[in-house]
Length: 440
Image: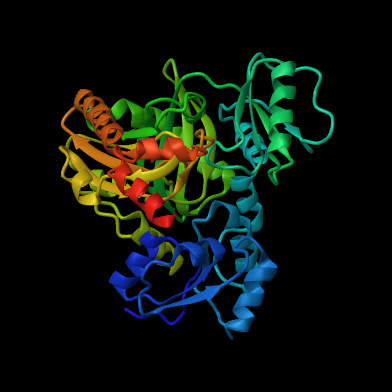
């Protein structure tokens, strides 16, 4: 079905593009340097790509559209799943006179301090917070709560985030973040929230939540980063664990209403402690970490297709086809160094209970010395098991299987050390010796 007006998509979302191909929906895709350098996925015939220097900049995007001869086009909407381009997409929609988030709503979903203030003013339980306007200025002499979490006010993926239990901890974190030289200068310090960290992913249309799925991190994201552990998520079963939905759904609906999201895909994080649910934060986009695959596997819902429907002004057709059992995923992590060998995709997907796998690092990639945020991994594996106990058991078995089959060469080795590793890496030191003699 060809639509007269095309949606303007800011940033690559392979799930939305897949839906465009399946439904023969044309679109204009604006993409930035990261995708140019790593390689665009195969684009449907009806999708027009436009390169821009910066997906987050109105100037860069409008200039790119003008150069492409699209400045006067009336778009069906402006949409993005790029967290950092959300406000830009809203401003573009307003400028172009087409549907999209309003800039004020977009700010609520980007600014973690503003977001909590709005939610708290609506009577929803959430953490207290304060703002550090500039990380390079003075910091408070006292922590206003016994334990807090410092993070960039418009950050994501638990990047530059730390637990602080005193003013000394806060100063130490500030000095560390300053030394890292990142672009973030405004930070928020939030009261530490106890309990299990939940996530809710869903679809809202005309203010109505059409679908939502509640899940949990096996341990909170910040704890995962601080422990240098692989991030793991598993979906709650709506029948066997209906209590989780009864607790989460009222908070989800009230929070979305307070924040003003009436159309879109959302990814919300909550804390559950002693039978109570507290708002943590919410993004007006699809979640990462195989959230799309988990929901498609467990419920038969395609969030990319739903996002495309919303982008062209249609009500998403959501037919739930729920599968029994536990669906979840785990990150695959590795030691630091240079990736020398990794199992093939076919080997991984042949493992018991593996439904989906993605290997995100190629041989030769430099792997970091530590897990700095929740985007760091060499791959992800999604599992479906009959019980929760089996899910945890299979996750550990899969991680152990990878540990035995990933080969990483430590960085900074001397020539002699590398030569000593040759037999283990499949090389032959005798050939090296012969080469040296011939070279003389």
